[in-house]
Image (cartoon, rainbow, N blue to C red; front, side):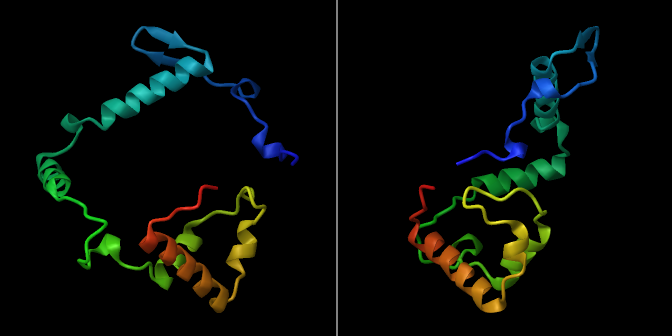
Length: 133
């Protein structure tokens, strides 16, 4: 299978502006990526959050998630049509995936076909048997 033009890019084709971090200047794409990653990690540390948020997060993280129980937890329920439509609405027209299905093809499916896709997703979710590809 021939690769599309959009999948054949590398960092060397792009010019990155230099990044200054205190007294150092980073020019290589690898160093720039490291500095950006380090900055994101620093921002997402616990001491960056308010006390109120930390309390909510701590409470939520202590709540166990049980995928194999019979309770009607929101994460154990079927996906709804409005959720599928919302997800499709939020998608952008990008390169087709491995099966060459373009977004505009999915976006123009009729209600019956969308319902069938939704049923398939719900079946996969309930049975917990995920496709390998």
